[in-house]
Image: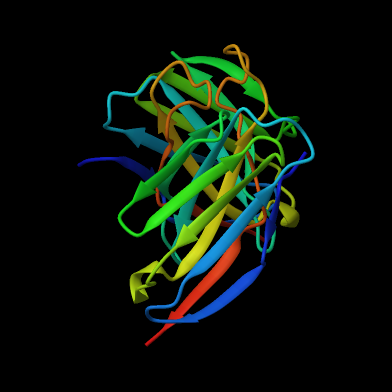
Length: 114
Length: 115
């Protein structure tokens, strides 16, 4: 089952913050976040495993709420380079059976203006 | 050459043609993937290979035929495609085993148009 991302689109000015959510109706094992710029390959941002951890990467961080089966991506003090489509990819099986099978959300288009 | 490369970058083919997409990874990974990305649709996993063995076929029509001769190369053979198969086809690789614990590195994709 495909995870649901919200919002579908965000428009920001440089320096503003944004949150992108990824929700699942099934128990999550891991959540991947990727960013894809127009005409380019998706680029890996981070992975979160079940356990409610939070990760950070420069001014981009993410959390995993196991109770809600939801991950959130936080972009703070946004820069023009943050523009792109953000995808979450979710895996549902544990114990080595998922074989890398990720189910991706529909994407959130983030546009940062000067 | 580094990362994941794909050729050709653009392909236009008729419904009766046969063509192949090629993917090569230079990252020392043993798991490789094919994805389909259509307009306004999520990325769809098509196939997963681990150490040249196919471990996942996500109910893909037989007109798409993957081949993985070694851990560095992955092909997608196409024949008698339909216009709805027009999409961006992305290849990715990751460390093994591909248990969704490792990040996937994507190639730039092949933009396929079926006429």
